[in-house]
Image (cartoon, rainbow over all chains, first blue to last red; front, side):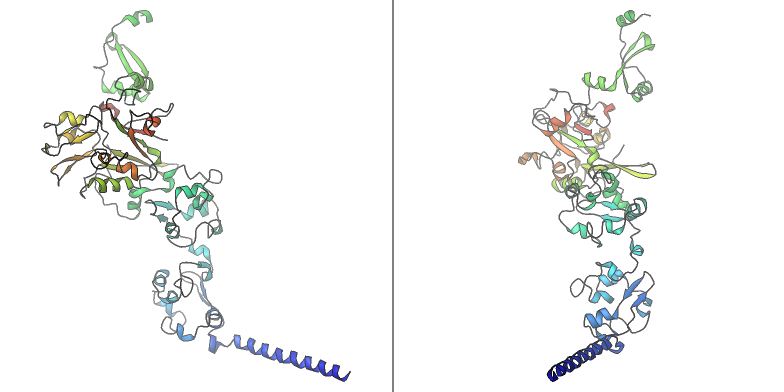
Length: 228
Length: 254
């Protein structure tokens, strides 16, 4: 009986010590001196973007001097004020791109929604233009979203990844693949949308269309105007 | 006048019919085949009928290919997307100078607006290797001629004096002055650069990813071009049929 009581006391003590240890870890989570500001940094302009110190310091074990002050000065809004913190500069290895290069961490031209809070802000207004395997094919997000009412998920990322030129790099970005239901052919199958082997020039704008689009229409050659 | 009497009347021929008059009927899809009684009566037939029966038919007629190897090309025009891989292949194969007016083949573009959206049409063009080539007729030195075996309109650069009369005569704008050769140059269906090496296709046809250009011998019934040009109910057309040059480049949507 006495022994049984001792066991009970021991169990209580043991549970108590676990509780204390767990408490200690929880307390450390919010140590802003070690891990930086607890609340995520939110940029409103030019698009809504979020950065979490916690993800990078506590979870990815980065120290403050990994980024400060070489990549980012410790001042609210300072990076954006430089005017050089753009997706283009990041792709060249500046700011977040220093680590987010597809090697140390995911590349800045992938996983857009990891940082961008409102993806509708990112819908390209310009035409997407492919030049491979043939020059040139256009895609308009506007007609597919506004006119056809498609959601981003209809194509991304199952048919196309959100990365400029990604489809072009694959060897099967061909009409044959489209006929087999890949890429555009997923919908352009004659039932959901016009078949991929019809209306060729809806999407194919040719070399001349490409030159016009790029503002490079200064060719006065006979080849452009060999008509009668 | 009764029809029986009219049938006995003399056909005065269509030579003196004005172009305007002829055109009016052409627009209705009719061809004038005869003039009777001083022009008060015309006999008409449908264009399709006229083309089938006339020896001047622009569409090839079975068994009427004058050359042993009657090389021709069919353009399946609606397949063309103006990728210009044909143009690039031709330039490389035939060493076309990098001058703005130097070309053997090109893609023409027509932009129209349909229901508020832009519509594009592309048409590949090259020398038509006509059966009655106006360029050959006008050449003062016989530097350009029909190859007797293949019917290809070829150039003898050594004989060419660069007078450019052929350039003016060509209904298809298919000739250019080659500064390097100091002679007129043009498409020759890759006669020297590919056919002579045993290849069966021109560079442009081989390069086309959409198989717009089908090249072959019309006298060989096993060729794809023979099959395409002898499909019943397929509309075939040529460019500028009015010149009477009888071109050997045919167009269709297939």
